[in-house]
Length: 168
Image 1 (cartoon, rainbow, N blue to C red):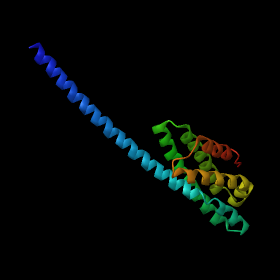
Image 2 (tube, rainbow, N blue to C red; image 1 turned 90 degrees about the vertical axis):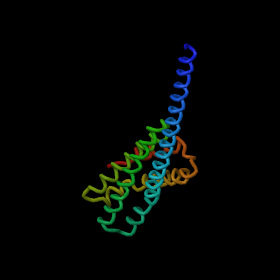
Image 3 (spheres, one colour; image 1 turned 90 degrees about the horizontal axis):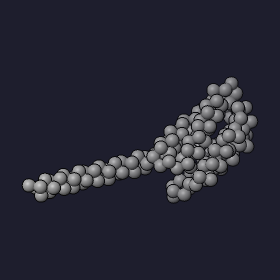
Image 4 (tube, rainbow, N blue to C red; image 1 turned 180 degrees about the vertical axis):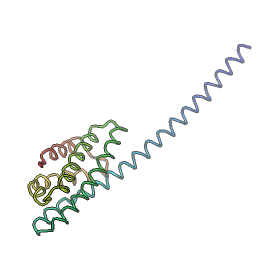
């Protein structure tokens, strides 16, 4: 009788263990799928901002205020996408590089939103053009390393430091 109970408990524990193992594996697959989606969104947002150099060309060619306002509005949206995706990546992985990217993207979003809503977006962009070109280089470096998974904390820390140099 005791042996039957022990056997029943052992079988129950095996079933529970198998169920938990399956659930854990399934949850792990869901997390990996979420990470893949967040990487794709981040990649798209980074790509969007790799052409910040266009602002310099626009200023040099005396582009209209409306055109500059539209362009910085696009960068605002791309920075918002990057901010949200990198915050989620940080939540999933706990890696500091994603937190740095989140804060840098927040700084960019705030700056571009301010430029878009200012009376003269040309002036706001012109005052920060040198920093924006260095930010473009930092974003391009991260974008190129993103596809191979070689983004480092130094890269994102550098970008964060650059975004803190923006003034408005």
